[in-house]
Length: 142
Length: 103
Image (tube, rainbow over all chains, first blue to last red; front, side, top):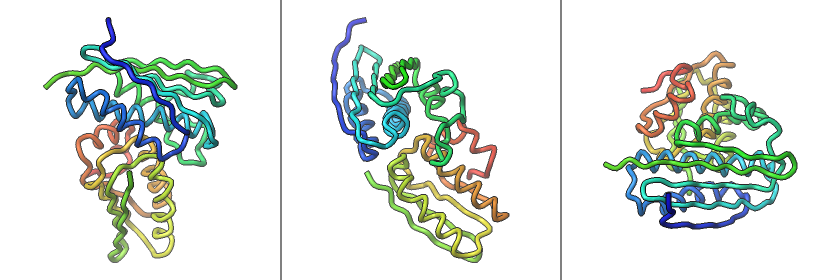
């Protein structure tokens, strides 16, 4: 499958950039003319991944989030990476309602949302090195 | 992106109207406002009107569950009103519809 377009950006791990990231991805994906539902699923999943990087990866301290999007003829691959503390146990982190930050009222549903709203979700993480989320979404057309 | 919050209290019902995008950034700004209003007057029912919410991720779920637990600790109840179909999808996925009325 040949990519038809690609973009890469980096931004600070500030909570104001959660909206920025999802709007940028949605604008980039719009050239494939996805349905509003697919676009909403994509935006929600990007927001989850970026929020995870800010809260869990960098523990709300300053860091850089790297985001790459690759467009194919009817799908998008989104890669969101941080160089934060990493995830100790990925399978445990994916358990619905599991959170390491209950004091922040985190629902622990971030990975469940990404798994449910995207077609594929792959997580690479190393303790002390960071986390990379790779997810893809196929677009249905109206 | 901003989230506007309007709060109205009538009898013992506190209605919170949200307008905008409900993500982690917005939640951290409005959580305390809602909690202060729950604390300052006897509230038996918390109504979250989401007709103006155009986006929500799991941070919104955390906000809802947190307020649900708080109002329940005072013997009260909580209802969600007017979520869009997009919001309903994430509310159902996270089981919120099993905790409280959504209409």
